[in-house]
Amino acid sequence: MKLAYIDLCGFRGYRKPIRIDFADGFTIIDGRNGVGKSTIFDAVEFALTGSLSKYNDAKASGETVADYIWWTGKGPTPTDRYVDVGFRDGDELIRVRRTQFGKPDSAMLLQLTKQLCDLDFAPEEPLAQLCSTSVIRDEHIAGLSLDLKETERYALLRDGLGANDADAWIARGLRLTTAAKQRSHNRK
Image (cartoon, rainbow, N blue to C red; front, side, top):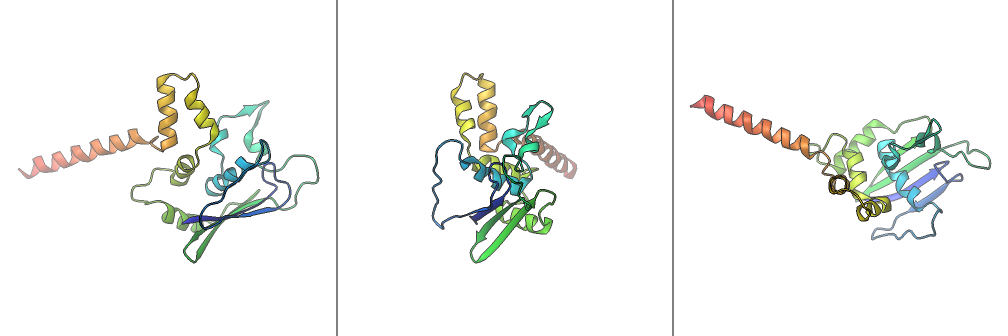
């Protein structure tokens, strides 16, 4: 499955509609700072999860980043604010669309989740983890090179690799081992 396109309007710094089609091989997105390159990746994450994890804790003056997901800049406010992301799997196109006041089709989102993740082994929030492990943002790379404590660097790297639910898997493994031992003991 490949990212086919991103179509958005009134999302973050993009007031006017814009559509970016991705090539079958690879696509290079280049530009100076502040022109919206990161917003393209934000749009994919927002379409899949309904949030932007890089801003989870950001707050100022009683506002959160959620107050700035949709266009608030100068110029007329777009009448239709949306993020529409398409994924191609062979000849099949799967679309996920979020609007300012609406949620995506839950059946379509589940279909996409099943195609992107093995639900038998998926973490609790598979699309959120997929976003955090598939797009390595520059702020994560910079965080690894700064003067962080060892535990903080480990946590940042663990989150970047998607191993942030390791404790849950270890606990699950211990429960399975205990249950297997108990069954084996009861058969004797």
